[in-house]
Length: 543
Ligand SMILES: NC(=O)C1=CN([C@@H]2O[C@H](COP(=O)(O)OP(=O)(O)OC[C@H]3O[C@@H](n4cnc5c(N)ncnc54)[C@H](O)[C@@H]3O)[C@@H](O)[C@H]2O)[C@@H](O)CC1
Ligand SMILES: Nc1ncnc2c1ncn2[C@@H]1O[C@H](COP(=O)(O)OP(=O)(O)O)[C@@H](O)[C@H]1O
Ligand SMILES: [K+]
Image 1: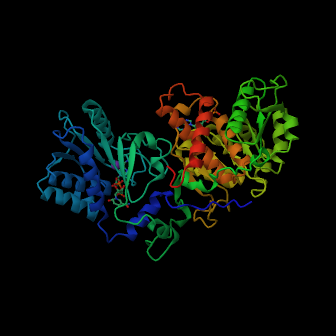
Image 2: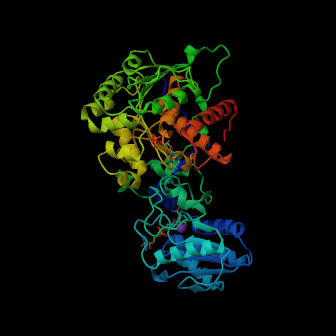
Image 3: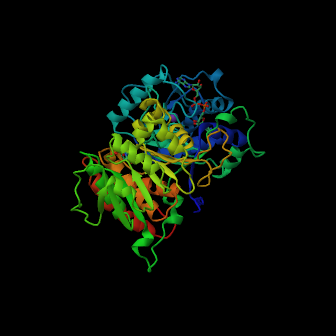
């Protein structure tokens, strides 16, 4: 089975800060700050809620502040009133930022040392900190972000963040204390992972990219060390490779229409193992998802001896005991939905790990692996070619697997997912807001020469919404993944497509008024089916 996934044009790169700095250095001869401030001014003009009111521009002590000064200068040239607030020491500014500040003053602009309390704003521009921030906001900046936030609420005006919302870590999506919540973010050169996972989506609002005249592909040269690359080798060991913001184009080659001469045997046998006493619903949800997302035949093995013999809602499902499921020939198996952690669960999981089929591990299967080194060794020893492993932990399960706490996982979700992928030789979806996908060494176009010693490619999924934070959603995701695996999808694309599809289905339901409050896991199953059929039927480019 060929598991390599060609990357189609349109794939959207996510660049870590270290790589952005190389890119910036490689294009130092170009007026990047002037272009950034100009692009910001153009969007700011459109965003103003009231053109009679002035724009408040907060300018910080670094180059983000330089962007803000350029933006303010351009707004003044367009006859827009601006109030710039900055305490940057001119002697400590970079040459570019110093020049931007001076040009603003030379053009007749004035700088205030504090935010005026009584002025109603048409827009607030946040140019305090960009990719240079790596700690809680210090005085006076924390007070300024709190005041700006309160005034934006008071004035019903938007907040436009330059590059990243001040206080958001651009690499991890972690919010430092005092971080600002913007409604819009104009991000420079390339998109950044921190805008799309953890706290990022809440703080960034609507994200647009201003490439500043630097070709979208230039990052590849900066990453690989072409002559264009800035002199930088000391940080090579810690350089996070670029990732992707997931889109249907990433898995489009596997969105194939069925041949007319199809039969159920061609669409695979999906198995779900779980359903211990009190949790048969989890296994049924996963089974229904596998059935409805196209598996040719779906078998559900429950550990509860009292489990029903038939699913009245979907009598198409074949229900049996756990041991009987493990003796059934399967194309793909998911273990975990409602599995429990007793001896029977442990024994059945150990048996499943020995099967030469694509295997999805979720929920209590992950908790058992975290608890028992013998099982963990069995996972890591599976053959990623013939018997790939897919792990779908939520942050608490990931913390158990990595023997740390949930906060440590959430502080750097990309690192956590990549570490799990490397440690278990598995495809990983670290779930939650901005699910992080990571793939094991040597699969799916992974570059085994990644400079940071973790040969695991990664991506972030932008679909999904908080309506999905409800019981049963993870079980449905497992069912969708196993359905695609059973139908012959390679493991990396199957996991990426399932995650993206499930989130997009939930988004479609919310857009139609079903949720976010009260959205149920079961409702996402038919919605995902509709969307999958639409995607299969669509011609590229897919949206
Ligand atoms: N990298 C790029 O490609 C480009 C960068 N530009 C801008 O430059 C920014 C990066 O500039 P810098 O590296 O100067 O970084 P920042 O402007 O993000 O901030 C760094 C400054 O803030 C101080 N600082 C950091 N954390 C602080 C805290 N918690 N409390 C108080 N002070 C703190 C630092 O000591 C330093 O003076 C980008 O985000 C972007 O806005 C643009 O001008 C154009 C292109
Ligand atoms: N705030 C959110 N934004 C986007 N997706 C979310 C959000 N909350 C949960 N999800 C998604 O919903 C699913 C929940 O899975 P999980 O936590 O395992 O639920 P369960 O308890 O039902 O097993 C995951 O796919 C997760 O990524
Ligand atoms: K900012």
